Length: 351
Image 1 (cartoon, rainbow, N blue to C red):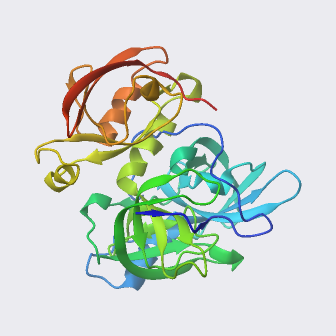
Image 2 (tube, helix red, strand yellow):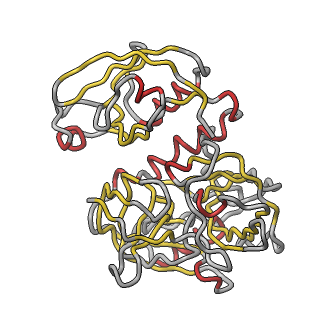
């Protein structure tokens, strides 16, 4: 399904419509999900919504921006590493000249200055750093384990109300594709009926155990639909976050594709492939990129790189992170017509 009547749930304020077509790139190293000693024990899967929210609140932040010309905006973010690493949406910080991050953890009573480490505009993700080493990282689940009807909770800072807002609902759709206004086409999203409003973007979508399953990114326009919001699956986001953190932008290799894991029999069958197929589905090929020049197509599944099996998006991201711009590689692809090999030369991700 492709839904185009959308607003970005991102910034609220004087300038509440930054676009997702910014610059830069994205990637993280290992994401820290272990809480510092002394933190409250994690909520159980059968606990109340209030228990889950209490566990999550210290890890969700308010991202406030100023853009050239005096405009301002607000969005949300999620702490993924106690050493100052925060994930948000690219459109929340796109074009910002100043970023301030306000916390709800009881430790940081004043906002801290945020710096953009890197972004992936094509996935509407950005990674920020603040000068702190005692943040409370959120616990992370596998979004691939979600089913239609599972309970989810959205936590963020919408509409400039001065504090965190919590809404709850269910997973109402899987693998959705949207085009949020001037932003990039986004694929493989979670759909939820938990209310998502301007300012929620970059905030947490969590399960009943208080574990992160998605990064909230957009909502259907008022009048076009009701109770339809979207989040970036955390399984797809983590390799990008790791990529941003792992190495300087200037040395990052780029294939020119967006990807999603094929890690289950059902996912393979849905693509018309043998149930045992494991790999990385190409969801988009960017014009002029290495993959486009090699005639790689959306829907192809990468099953090996230079003869080494690739079983997930995370494995492919790790393999590409070991490459340098200018390296030549061989990809083994498969689609409904069968397997094939392609050679391509990776480049630096363009601005």
